[in-house]
Image (cartoon, rainbow, N blue to C red; front, side, top):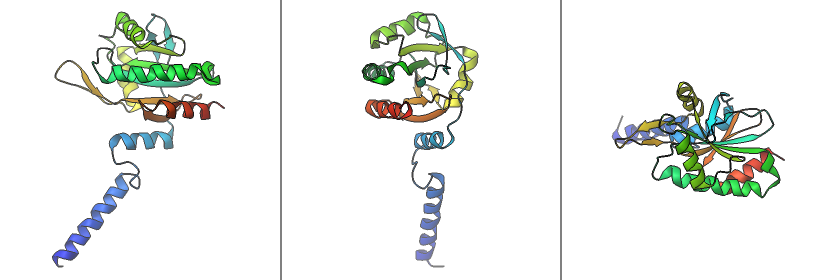
Length: 200
């Protein structure tokens, strides 16, 4: 077999592997693949108890017909989580102006529950104008954290400065408790349109 044929076989084989491992080139990243898998499978999320910024308790899944938007944060994050807080503040304001306002919850869930005590959660809420009605800031119990992150497919990696590298996205749970969509944190209008489609 000459060099041309060998190269052709390698290119064809590589193309096949790329096609197979990226859902027909739809997902060229791990995050893209995660989002496609969620839309296909719509996995049911665990109904864990969360402690909110006010010290009250709420469940991740809601039995009152609400759609829930979940984002994962840690309150001492100096950049990404603060920027994302601004996006969620905008989303909260957009929801307040629409008929869906009584059927949507937003929860920012801390994956650093030991450091994110009630004071830290409350400070983050005030900084970003989380109203406690549509949008609340909360933390899981330490014993639930690992399974919660796994269920959502969120990767959290400690860095060398006491912080974390992590996924940044809006996770939308439908009225039956199924994770149905994952959107970019800055896609406020896309989130509003998705919510309005889910809540006609």
